[in-house]
Image (cartoon, rainbow, N blue to C red):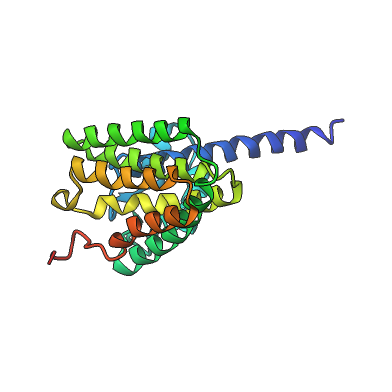
Length: 229
């Protein structure tokens, strides 16, 4: 029994570290979601470990995962920074998003129920209200929730997992867009209502085309550090 105990303790510590590393990862992603961390911001292991009252080990593990997911980048002798996406990066993300959400819409059109339609309309109304009040971070959050809900309606767990892997990267895009380029409340209401109508029609082809057309205009965005035309 004594020979087994150290292994049990090591396993418990591993589980604890894994949980903490997930907490750190979630903290940073959530800060990106809320607009508290923006592309180019520097983050350090010591600061995060001190704020959370933990050792640097799970923070280091979380950083490795964030780097793998392309959410942060490390620069020798400079440190670790929230990733800055260029036009090529954004185009790649939106192209994959168009494929995933177009297919999700096709599947969801066959499964969507009246209660689902009502819930999506409510989300869009809340999003439009937030845009009226210029609560832009809230608009971004609600917009992501809307598109996630459509993917969830497919009942396809693999598709949802693929979309979720892309999601943190997509969150970086709104932080690069100047306020003047963001959609007004009427535009948000009209464009997302069109998506709901396409889903509610029960026509898979119409739904897929509507979602692809919805994403397509954003495949060539203008980053904040480039002049708009």
